[in-house]
Image 1 (cartoon, rainbow, N blue to C red):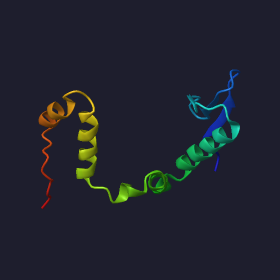
Image 2: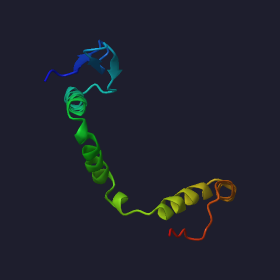
Image 3: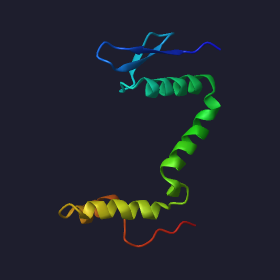
Length: 108
């Protein structure tokens, strides 16, 4: 199958993806050729095999944060409120506006 994207390098050294059909150019925001080639391969693979996109995303996310699969929303909300506490009076205002209580959430 013909690949939809190609790789170009601008005179200032930044690599871009070029859509061979539409001509659109998308910056890869890198000057490293090996990194640009890897991003190009990923983009072409995602276009030719869209059924693998979600599977690849799950693998990368689990690699970045292994606890993600077991984390509960309550932990996320507690973390957000704790970060808001760092600001002056931010947690109380934010909690009251969003309806987040300190009591644990139970789902039935």
